Length: 176
Ligand code: ZN
Image (tube, rainbow, N blue to C red; front, side):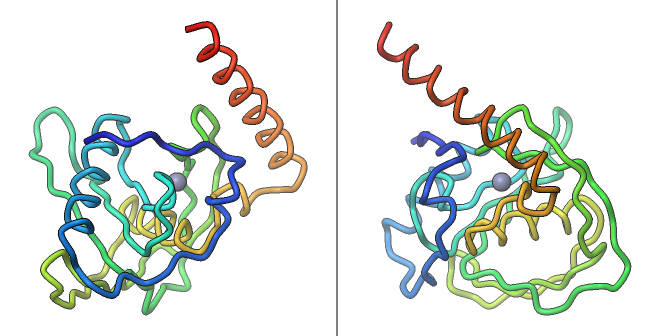
């Protein structure tokens, strides 16, 4: 089931999320819902707080396009365990801040550990866009958004525009 995505500014996007302690049916359902929501958006990553669930859970798939098959990562309690000194700059966006983009500098390579949906420990290195994506999603679990990396003025401009966007959404719903 597709779930509604929360838009910035929202207090739930600023919270530190709690670790997943047990892989229950509801966690499995939640990850399926997150994948469906991410692919439908469409987006390359989604963190649980973006659908209002304050658990340390992310999904991502930076490779999918018209020709390649979906090959998603589902990560429970993901953690960056090492990062390169060398950095990369990507223009980032976020499903919670639609139509706004900004260049963010992050480590070029990271090593991440997590539990998969079967509860098995995984550890893998990521590079390029996938490295940026996994860092962006893990940030969500710590209440951090990509706009927290940019200058205060630009951040305020985006936040004001998002406040207006949300007001307009509410108005549209009233009309319908
Ligand atoms: Zn995001």
